[in-house]
Length: 248
Image (cartoon, rainbow, N blue to C red; front, side, top):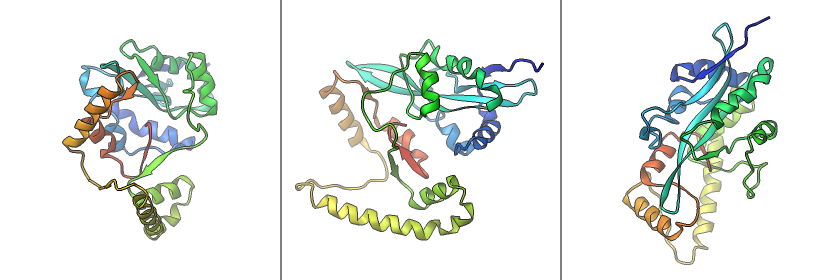
C-alpha cells in the first residue's frame, strides 16, 4: 500500500509542479512572476512576518498532487481593518481526492484570518466548502464571470490558449483590433450619456485615488468594504497583462 501523502506549507519553488498539476485538469496557470506577484508586493502580505502562501499535498515520491493558494486581502468595517484571505486555484489529483478536505481544512483553520472569501469556487468545490460552513454571498450571477480587459492582444491569446487553439495565436493581434474598435464605439456612446460628467483615462494611480478611498470609507463606515487604497490598487493591477477578474 502506498504511504499516505503529507500536507505541507507551499513555497515559491513549488510553482513548476503546481502549474503542471493545474494544467492536467484544465486550469490556466499563471507564469512564475504573475503567480509570485499574488504575494510579493501585496500590502497585506507585507504586514506579517510570516504568511503561508498556501499548502500542497505531496506523495511519497515528493510529487505534488494537490494545492490550494492562500492570498491575503484587506477589508474594513466600522473604521477597523479586517484581515481576510481568498483561496486560489485549488486542485487535487483524481487519485487523491479523498484528501481534499484535509487540504481545505488548512485554509479554513487559520487563526490570524477574520474573513474567508473565495470567488472561484465551481459547483464541485462548493460542496466541500459547505462542509466548513462556508456560505454563498446572496447576490450576483454565479454562473458568469466578470472581467475587465486591460490588454486586448494578450486577452485574445489567453482565450485561444484556453480553448486549445494555440496554432491560431498569430491571429491575436488582428482579432484584438476588432475589440478595440468595439470598445471605442462603446466609450463614445457612454460618454454621451454621462450628463456632463467628464471621464478621463490614467495609466497610474495617484493621490486622488487615496482621497476618494478616504471619503468612501468615511461615508460608508457601516458597510463591509474591500480596501481600495492606492497601494492595494497598484498591487492588484500591476500584473494585469491579460485580464482582471473583478473581486479577485
